[in-house]
Length: 277
Image 1 (cartoon, rainbow, N blue to C red):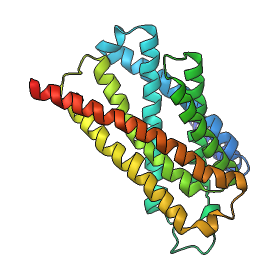
Image 2: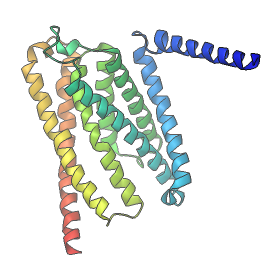
Image 3: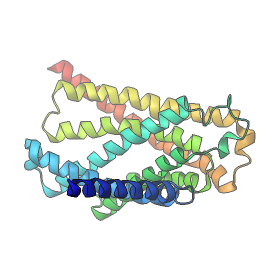
């Protein structure tokens, strides 16, 4: 009995110490930018290992893949988890949270931030760093120059927004585009599993077209419209932040249009083959 009481006491002690560590260090305002980035990198490693463990135990396709295909399989698992997390965070802050609402705040929207918004950006930077490292490590097997440019632009913009506290609303608007990543990855998984002729592959292709149109084309137009409406506030940002607000979404927007053209051609080709069958 005394042993169990001592065990319970020890558990409570560790629990209180953990709470103290999280509250006073991990989530303390001065440390959030650094701890969140490091946590993001660490979580990428955790997800990579979990993908390997689960796939190796439950996927017949994974077992017969080459080493580089397994690495890409696990890496796409990381990007899928990140995309689901950051797109959900982005949708919340842009459309539901009061943090960036003009109705409830009198201060400038371009300078608003919170612990949660900063935490989300830090975790996302951790992902971009980890994924860039993977791309460079296995270049060009996991992605070519366009992926390096995309991740570099995104990483710089997100990092500036995190450490300066400026333009977090527009950063989250752009990050909503990550909602297309799970569908892109699913397409690769289906292709790798030999299911390119399946109905699931066709439906996913059409879904990619629709989600890409909304999240990477129309939403970017909305973002620039929002910047136009709040241009008097955007002008008060640091010159580097001002340049990022216009430069990064414009560059990513051009890349999105190029990729969208490829998606349209791919959907047409797939549907045409489907009609022939």
